[in-house]
Length: 252
Image (tube, rainbow, N blue to C red; front, side):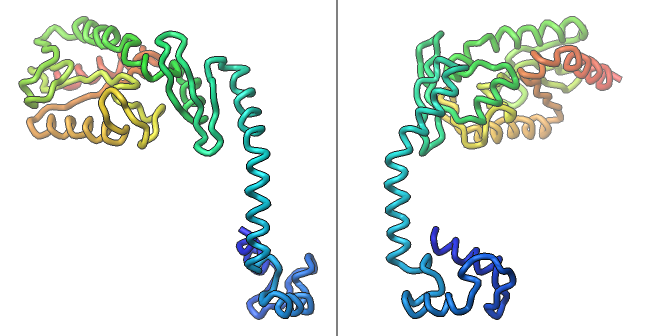
């Protein structure tokens, strides 16, 4: 760290020949830098190994003293809004949350919190698979039945055997999947490295699996449409219009 600071200083204050290009700072002086070379074998005390070790020791000691205080301050700030956050780890940047519904604990970072607030999703990812996704999927199915009189297959495994498709309209070569926020790791909520404990997969692996189903459908002449839970909940009218227009286009 100290050596980096010295190199950064050189880059900003000295030209390629070592001449000062600004009047700021003592180490812009050739005389001062020459004395440093004589005393420490380098152009700045910050480049000296002993000095760097002392600086590192000071930083380590400071961290030992200050880290618990910083952690507690951050925890207090978040607990004021979210009482069920019970711990914060400054090294990992992770919060520990205990769900008031299921009693399970889960860990997440600040970005996760902000995304959850933005899309009005419960913090607990243990509860999300039980939050009514199957009910919403049924709502999607009922809506399609309202606007489409043709044959509709549910939970079909004959199109891309042995994989299952939620809703299939065989006469239109059209299929729909309802993507629950947690089960399909919606990218607006989750990062690629987030882990789905139910599927034992990272978010990236879940996305790759979902994309594979799209490709398998294409291979047999079907178009697979994924309806996101967030869109169904937060933009229901436009999502329904999208589905209706799509079905009408395919029918034509």
